[in-house]
Length: 333
Image (cartoon, rainbow, N blue to C red; front, side, top):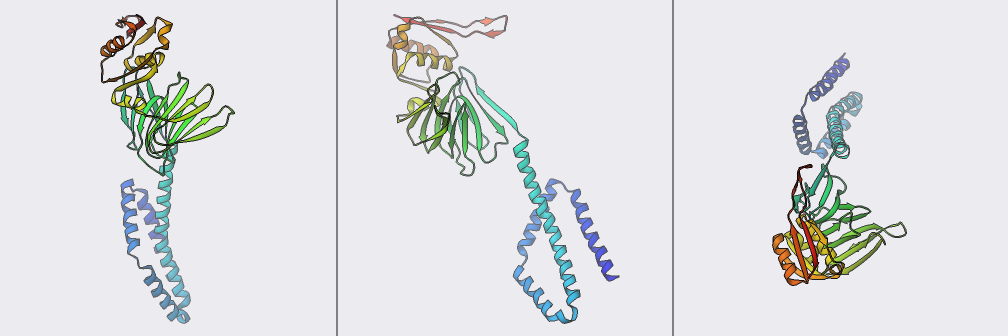
C-alpha cells in the first residue's frame, strides 16, 4: 500500500510537471531554465554524496532494500527535471540551428549606375558598393561561414570572427578572410577579377587552366589580377590608393588606358561614352579627381589631353517613361 501510494505521488509530480510545461511560453521556459541552472550550482555534490553514503553504510544491514529504494526514487525525482531541462535545452538549440539552416531569406543590395552605396552587415562589417554593383547574403547572417555573393566592386572592412570566416563569392572565385580590409573588383562583363589587400590576410580561390581549384595567399599591399579567359593569376606589391580610394569619392587614374577611363566614367556618372577616334583608345591618363562633379571632370580631361568632348543631356523617353542616358562623345583635337 505504501509503495503504491508512493508511486501515485510520483506520477502526480511527473504529470503535473509536464502539464505545466506544455503551457509555458518561451520566456517562461528560459526563466525556468535559468532558475534550475542556478539551483544546480548551489548543490554541494561531494557533501551530498558523502552524507548518503554514510547513511547507507550505517543502515545497510537493517534497511538496505528500503533505503536503496528511497535513494533510487529521490535520484529519479532529481534526474527527471534535469533530464527534461536538458532535452528542452538541446531541443531548443537544435530547433534554432535548424531554423538558421533551413528558414532564411535572401537579401540583395544593389548600387545603381551613377551611385555608390555604404551598408553595414548584421555582423558589423562595413561594405561600400561601387556603381553598378550588388551583393546577396542570407538572413539570418549566421553559421560556420559568413557568405556573400558579389557582382561588381566592393571595398570591405570585415569584422573579425575566427569561428566564422567571411567568404566573398563571385563567379568561379572566392575570397576567404577572418577580418581585414580589402577591395574586390569582379564585374561579370570584365575580363579580370582584381583583389587589393590593405591589411590582414586573405586567401583567393579560383579554377586554373587545368580545371583544378587552387588558392593564393595574399599579404598587405598585394594586388592580385585573375585573367578570366586565360585563368592565370598574377600578384604584385602595389601602392593601393588607386584601387581602394574610390569608396571615399577619390578617383585616381595612374597611367590608365582611355578605354578603362571611359568605362569608369560610365559607371560612376551613369552616362554613355562614345569614342569617335580609335587613336584615342591608346591614350593613357594620370590625374586625380576628389569629389568633383561630372562637368568638372570633363573640363579637366579636355584641358589636360589632346581630346575634344561633346556632351548631350539625356532626355525622357515618353514611350517607356524612362530617362535615356546622357551621351559623351570624345574625339581627337
